[in-house]
Image 1 (cartoon, helix red, strand yellow):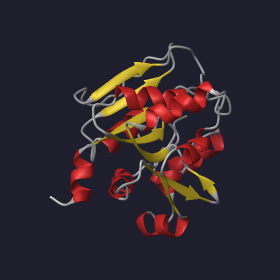
Image 2: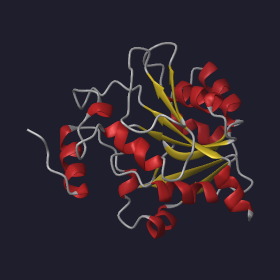
Image 3: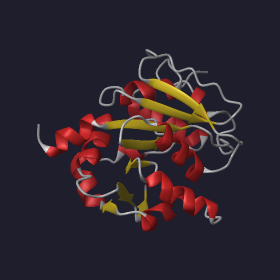
Image 4: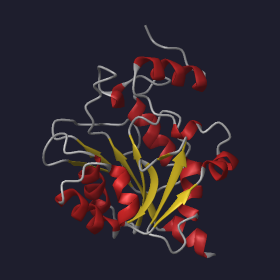
Length: 211
């Protein structure tokens, strides 16, 4: 087993689903996507490459993805809408594995093999954070469990931006041209934030929107 294979065997996945979904108008995790809730689609995809999945949800959310429950752990934020920094920290702390691929719960076209490739880039870094369109993608990224301490310090200082974590940890930033070799249309990074995004994601996936 080479070092990259070893890293993959030590990696789990974290899905953050505690956002307000204000632009969508309904909880994004429950959107129908090919006959299953969007969260189910994401968890099912991640389980192709990760044997442990932690779902971090808001206190009043009870996500129940229709997938085998083995290897899926649901934890809740202590307070609603504390922000992604705290949610990511809680997810890393709850993870049994030393490495976690972290993503948001609105990546309808997430590709587990792209996530797996990012894990393989970790090497001696503490994190691997892609950059798309000139913007960091901290919720389609890889973190070592020990990043939780730096993230906690950031949050305690009043920082709310998850992108700030890239400067607080030893992160490898993956430029877009490298990502295009893995995902030529960058679909894995497509966020569903609005009804228009949802319709486009369904179309790209070859699904019909339910009436």
